[in-house]
Length: 246
Figure: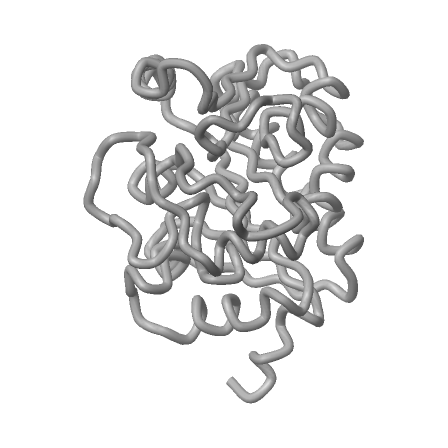
């Protein structure tokens, strides 16, 4: 277990520092084996990191990207679609070797099976894993299933997770948020060689505090990240707010 916590002065500085670390890890993987694999998070908390990452000195032609999660039965054209998010904010701006997307449309089980098979071919070098307001990682809401060995699965979203999506402006009301989603599972996330978490903003202060100060607990899914041999957590002054007395 190895945790490195970096506190930045602003979300912009956080994004730059996190992107620098991600780029360095990708560079090391490419130098060692000629290629790299990365998992990318989405959501408002990843804006600054993604913006800085596309400006980084990385040979993207040697990088394969996977993403963490997607709503079931939400069309890619919807503003909240994570496929739409990644294609517009990242994939269209760098020349990746390959991009593997989670699709919740059509035959969901077949989509998951194909994605599982692709992901199992080689280890992932860098997992860029955010932390939700309820402590979730990907869409593994409390209580998270720490035991399943399947790379992706369908989960039911809890109300606090849905409220976060409304609060970030992706949906108008909780009733508009899909009930289920496809998510990368905790064990699969933990199998990444390196994990980098960008967690800015005051709304994440409780989750950051609980993650760092509480014992391993499926009710705080992000506590699992503390068991990883190389976890790099980037927070800003606001998301670190509850740690002052820690």
